[in-house]
Image 1 (tube, one colour):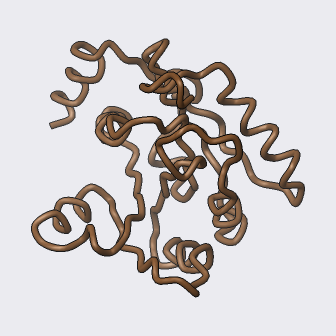
Image 2 (cartoon, rainbow, N blue to C red):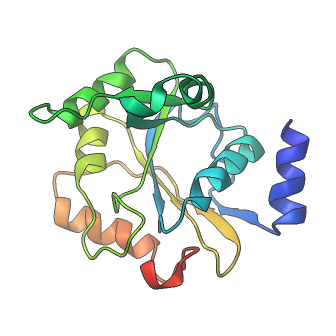
Length: 182
């Protein structure tokens, strides 16, 4: 099926992968991947195509209600993990623990936390990476240039403000599918 994903991604859609193209399934087995700007549901299937093209297994979390029959089977097959979003839980700790039981786990998240325009990113992904002691890898959804740019692994420091400034600069000028939400 990889040939079909490559055909759709490269030929039909006209996209390309740039940046850290040496990133492979063998070099970084655990990471938090932040993908932005997340402006449309199209980002999900583009991510699935990219995952197949690069052969880098990625995972995601979703509310447990999504993981019921018949969709639950599909979401688990493409790397999904059910998350109980009941209030009063430490979600950062719960998600960070997902890394512990896996040899290979790359969690893809949107730092915006929504598909709408936001001024400030959520911080959960940052604390998940710190708690799990894994790097953050940045992926762009650049619809203007039809490319997914992949960063080198970045290990968060203890300076949230400086780290966010650095990470946000990686996405500067990138336009999502819905330009006004970028």
